[in-house]
Length: 134
Image 1 (tube, helix red, strand yellow):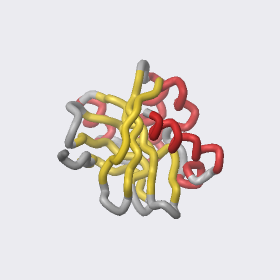
Image 2 (cartoon, helix red, strand yellow):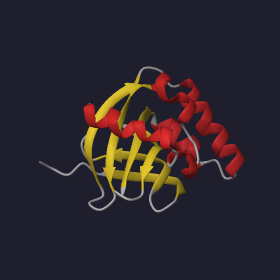
Image 3 (cartoon, one colour):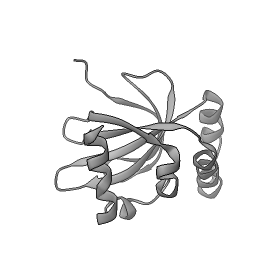
């Protein structure tokens, strides 16, 4: 099986790995807004949500030169997204997705575009179970 890799286009926030980015994947068509939902530093694993976006959205994100404007644009994208999104369990050691699931965007809307500290909170660890059950 071919490794499931994220292919970043633009990384907007990074802390020992992607926090917020736009990316393609090696296994799915399209472009995605990638947002960190949960992080287990001990196991070196993260749960990301991948929200489908358009090439126009990517261009608009890339044109945002100030952090305030960029975060506002990202929040608007998250708020306007509908339907389902993809959850992936990311292994930091192999730098690939090792599990995949889907969830409604509405279920994660309040946790999109958050800070690294939020991803470490105990209540966020539930996303590991969600993606594993896929």
